[in-house]
Amino acid sequence: MSPKKDVKKKEIFVDLPGRELKFTVVEDIEALITDVSDPDQVPCWADIWPAAYGMANYLWEEVLFFPGKSVLELGAGMGLPGIVCGLKGARAVLSDFNPTALQMSGENASRNGVQAELLLEDWRTFSCREKFDYLLAADILYDPLLNPFLGQIFHNNLKPGGTIIVSHPLRAATEEFLKNWYDANLFTHRRVLREVEVEGMLLPRYRIALDLYRSQS
Ligand SMILES: C[S@@+](CC[C@H](N)C(=O)[O-])C[C@H]1O[C@@H](n2cnc3c(N)ncnc32)[C@H](O)[C@@H]1O
Image 1 (cartoon, rainbow, N blue to C red):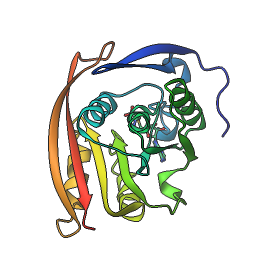
Image 2 (cartoon, protein in one colour; image 1 turned 180 degrees about the vertical axis):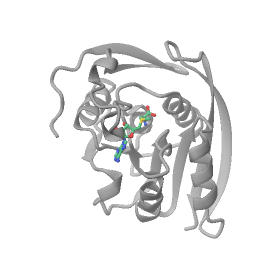
Image 3 (cartoon, helix red, strand yellow; image 1 turned 120 degrees about the vertical axis):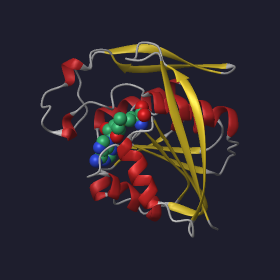
């Protein structure tokens, strides 16, 4: 699959405390919908989801990254959380299985002064063997058929002592997966809840959970 050339785009501003980022997202998402019966074709990569805003704010305000730390964002879509890590000095790798999403996330990184690496990978056939200090998962644990592949990546691609940050709007499928996947012998876990306001979304306000899993070193 190569990136779509005819995607209509729009610019949006993302406000972080003390910093404004400029992002390009898809303007007409409806026009990208071709086959609703195939979940792989649903263009959920084309906008920034409330969970990504919640994670980006949390990373910006609370997590201290420093040069040398590596971050892999899975299902990055437009790449907001990974780009925020790049702004805080981390080496940011943005990954997605959709080439147009990946191209747009790379452009979003550059326009905000971040040199992100791009990784085109499907969770079901994930071949990257590198281990990262941080794995980011913003609203990607929604499909019970895909969640086990992500659980495997969490084990395979995290360094000892590394942290997985999952953000989600408390979806039942996510809660169920995390409850069964979590192993208290391997990780410490802490949950932070944030209220997120997003302009132009269905609801004005979302409750976002951030689940942080730190692996034993
Ligand atoms: C709900 S969107 C979330 C996008 C972004 N993380 C955010 O929160 O704004 C899910 C993302 O996962 C990606 N995705 C879905 N299935 C995938 C798969 N099998 N392998 C890799 N990425 C996938 C989509 O292309 C999309 O970018």
